[in-house]
Amino acid sequence: MTNDQVKTLSNNKILVTGGAGFIGSNLIETLLKNRLEVVCLDNFSTGKRDNIAPFLNDENFKIIEGDIRNIEDCHKACIGVNFILHQAALGSVPRSIKDPVTTNDVNVSGFLNMLVAARDAKIKRFIYAASSSTYGDHEALPKNEDVIGKPLSPYAITKYVNELYADVFNKTYGLDTIGLRYFNVFGKRQDPHGAYAAVIPLFVKQFINNQSPVINGDGSYSRDFTYIDNVIQMNILALTTKNKNALNTVYNVAYGERTSLLELSNLIKQNLIPFNADIKKIEIKHSENRAGDIPHSLASINKAKKLLNYNPKYNIKDGLNEAITWYWKNL
Image 1 (cartoon, one colour):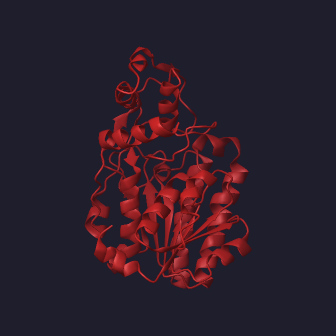
Image 2: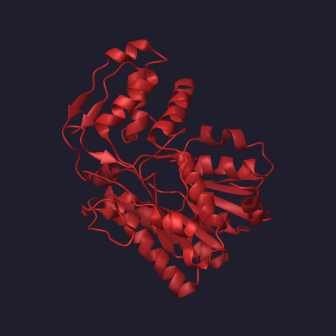
Image 3: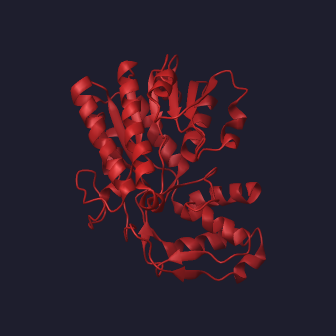
C-alpha cells in the first residue's frame, strides 16, 4: 500500500467480516499498520481468536462477535463504517458437498444480509471474496472473468450467487461493489488442522510431523496458487481505486501461473529440508480424485492489471519461502 493510497482511506472506518480468519486477519493487520480504523465481525466458527489477539490492544481495532446469518449483527457491525471487506464465508468444496444447507445459509443468506446492511448504512464500497470455483466445468485456460461454466459443487453455486446479488444491488440500490475471485490463496495463519484444511498448510504440517502427504489423483491436477500478500494488494486496490470503470465487476486474484500438485508437494518438501534433513526421506502418496474438484485452474490477470494496476509480487516459490518459514516457527 502506498502513502497516496493510505491518504485516500484516512478518516474512514473499514469493516472486515470474517476478520478472525486467514485472509481477514491478514487484511486487518495491514490496515492497522497503516493506522486505519477497523471493525472485525466474526462468529469464530472457523476463524481463530489467536489470529486477532495481536490487535486487541490497538485503539483503532474493534471486535464484534456476531454472525452474518443474523441481520441485526450485520447492521450493528456497519454502524459508522464507510467500506466493507466481506471475507466471511464457509469455505471448502468437500464441506459444501457434505453439508450444502449450512454452506448456503452462510454464503448466500449471510451474504444477502451483509448487502442489505451495507445498503442501509450507505456504505461507499462493498468488496467481497468471490471464488475461482465459479468457473466450474469451463475447461479453457486461462480463466477470463467474462466466461464461466456450470458450477461443480454447492460451494461454487453459492459464490456465483454472491456475484449475481452484488450486481443486482448495484443496479437496484446503487451500492458499489467489487468481487475478487480468489485462486487458491495461501500464507501465514492459514489453518493446517481439521478435515477441510487447504492443501499447502496440510502438506506442510504432514511433512513437519514426519507423515506422508497424500495427493488426490496422480498429481497432474494444477492450480494457480496465490500468496496472501498478492491478495492484500488486490483488496487495497479495490478499496482505493478512483477508476469508475473498475467498479461493479469481478476480478481474478492470482499470480497467473499454474503448478501441479506433484510439483507443489516437491517444492514444499525442498523448502522444509533445510529445517529438518530427515524430511528428504518422506515419500508422497496418492489416493482417488475428490468429487467436485476441477482438473486445472489458471487465471488471466489482465483485467486486474488494466483496470486496477494490479502487479502481484509473489510467485509460488517466493510465497512458499515466506509461508514455510512462518509455519516452521508456529506449528
